[in-house]
Amino acid sequence: MRVRFAPSPTGALHIGGARTALFNWLLARHDGGQLVLRIEDTDRERSTAANIEQILDALRWLELDWDEGPILQTARSGRHQQALAALLDGGRAYRSSATADDVRAYKQEHGAERGFRGREEADGAVRLRVPDDGATVVHDAIRGDTSFEHVHLDDPVIARADGSVLYNFAVAIDDLDAEISHVVRGEDHLSNTPKQVLVLEAVRAVGFAPAGPLPLYAHLPLLHGPDGKKLSKRHGAASVQELRDAGYLPEAVRNYLALLGWGSDDDTVLSTEQLIERFTLERVSRNPARFDEVKLKWLNGQYIRKLSLDDLTARLEAFTGREQLEPAVHISQEKIHTLDDFLALAGALLDGPADDPKARERWLGADGLNALGEARTALAELTDFDQSAVEDALAAVIARRGAKPREVYQPLRVALTGSTVSPGIFESVALLGQRETLARIDRALAAG
Ligand code: GLU
Image (cartoon, rainbow, N blue to C red; front, side):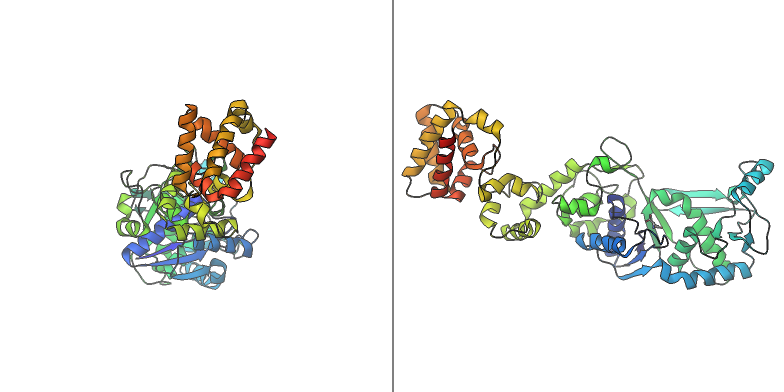
């Protein structure tokens, strides 16, 4: 099996493109085949070096490696020209100056359903001759066979009058030369497929390439947002870089993307090894798949909890650019869903209380301050300041006051962090240590 991922570097790699890359990668790895990376950079204005680098960077972050390439499509223009010349010489293509208006006029005369046939001229754009009879059958592993009657297909333009080739032509020649056995791509390319198949058959008919099987095609289902509409920016993170910056783990993203159109719901948490082992095209659905960031976040949380403390700490230190996070990571691991959640949860323990006036108002009124004062006394008396000693001391305060736990914990939390979010209260107090805890309480008492 030889598959390819062929992004057009016109911007960041989006979720749909990343899913296509992943499906190809899984197929190649499942089958012991090769993945070819081809950069379709024929749009010279948008295909900047920076855009190409962005795609490679996204693939590297996702840890999707390739076996051949990157092959730049523009570097293959000599080969495209040879194929074009072979088709012109062999009579399977012709020059025609027909314009869109000419095509319209033709259809008015012959009926809208009738494929356009041009007149051969000395110069003009190059059109492929579609055979008059028969049909082109596209075999799609997901959608089955679709037959396109030749009589309804226009002779497609394959090169402009200036000699530059068109997209569907370049793709077909590149797939042929790379000996691609499976073309797996988004559903939006479905309508290109008969044109590409016709090109492949024509270059073989004129002896430009040896006879051989056509690739098996597989068009992946569209991606929708949770509202059932086509996936777009308003559904949240749209590019791989945005997912990275939002604190998702590459292995969680791989797992989640794999479920977009493949697999079933019973087994959502699947390691990359399991995905490779199970991945086949037969289990890809034709129905649109839903990208739901809420689900991704949940899944990411599952992965975060499974990491070793060392590993999670290293990732968080890289993500935040800070050091010595291990103790705070230790008490946050069960509570965060993304790397980005970490500082939001535990940042105030590290950097000093935030200022949330609402939290102060709610929890540091007269009663709250009173409870806080009692907690201070109890915590000041401790000689051991570990988590369980803290817990016992605070439990005693709650019992003495006949209070609900939160009537003591929340004022304390607000005093220590300035807000009502933090890791577990005993863990947080123990992490701060006695001196810092008492100092923060004193500041809160003085401000109240
Ligand atoms: N370059 C195309 C894209 O980025 C993909 C072409 C293909 O896979 O055939 O959408």
